[in-house]
Figure (cartoon, rainbow, N blue to C red):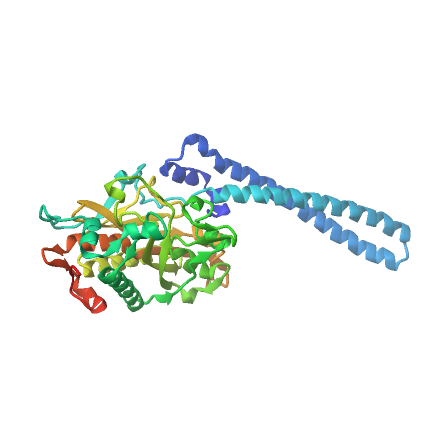
Length: 428
């Protein structure tokens, strides 16, 4: 959630940020409505403060007059206090209504893009930040996409998943299941070696937790909801892990706080039909290791660069071809100030597949969560939060299978062999 004092101080900057997100001019009036509501509630608060001061003064006078035995004067002042209390109650009710309206408007505003975010309306306008320097590999004409390889080698079964649950829920089997587990353990071991504390969070969260990281109200339709218990299946480990520090004040000396966790992720997004959503390209349940950092505002963009280098190192070790793109304003997530996507080359499909998003949210999530740190002057400030996929397994598996297919099996990257216990996937 944007800080209200930022909107007060720089309303035109906020509007410029919304324009970069391709908001229409007629919709920018929300900033003016927020400022008008804020002005009304501040005036009400001033009136309440003045009346409270008057009430307190009268109460002291009543005490003095009572001691002096001036009962008539006491009764007159009591009547004034009663009138003031009724007015205070009315003002509080009006202010509470304004607070509710103001919060709803603030929750509907996305984060303001970082100045470096390129303009644009869709992923076609994203900026290439780092591209693969060599030529993309050309597989033989007999090369198969990963969903065909899965059938040939018994790696995963989408039809069985549809039988057990529904479309988009793969069942990994045999060497495929071991590859999935190997990737999870590899990513967690790498995160621990990089200084991240391993977290195993719940897979269900309440509304306050989902609201804290911005899933509510923006992505309500994309999450699975357990109505009876009023809980949501997590779309990413970012949600419970970042909320560990909701309503917390941490010392500045503790920053940055680095956490990582593996979870299954659940997303209702259906998408379109065709080859681009076949196989593991888009599923409703997938495994992912997430990295989260809570950083000092002065250093958060240094932390972002560190996270980019870390995710790059994982893809390098997996021997995957990848590129990094900086998302344009129109493709930027609701809560992010700046996001870089990592895309691996799907050799058989001849297209790029996103496997990681690394984002700096600045104070947006921290303001919702009241996540603060105490500086050297003992004052509290909002922290910056960052997160990244390190990595999302479904599409990593797809790229590994397609890129490493050979006539006698599918080669396993050397770094994973100690985890899988085998060097290639073969027909059973």
